Length: 234
Image (cartoon, rainbow, N blue to C red; front, side, top):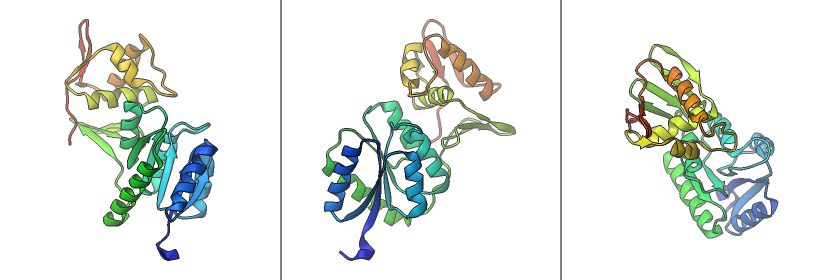
């Protein structure tokens, strides 16, 4: 393999032992690898050099992986594999919707991670490395920007969503036209910085309804919970 063919991978994880394990395994398979312990060091590495793939941990001190991914996606289409010790469906879905190309729960088998890296880089090469359009979810008259977490409607200014509102709206979109109890929504909306608990779910949904505006698709189902009446496109 010539130097021109060597591909560069950036591993971003505050677990130094795991980072070196992943880096060593990838180096053994002819990748050039650099590690970063947090989002700030990730930014510095990306400013200093070009990488063909980023392996990004979800839970890190300071800025978390989802926030770092949103910033990265705002300016580049570098392929990203997200790692998470949580393995939570909501985090996986949100990570993929924000712009991760793949998602793997920790602890992961290094061989599986290698296979994912190879597949991702192969797809990127076939796609020509083009910058992707801002990822959005459209439903009825509304559009949800998954990077900026803003909600837009034709003829109205975009509204910024809180983390809790974003997670609840995402949960509704993934389970449209199904009745969701308050307990279910609380579980789906949990996150490292989510401010949803118990009856506060009603307050959050009330605020979300105001941002959706007249004719919002959230329906209260007496003694059961809530239902989102509009199916997203695609």
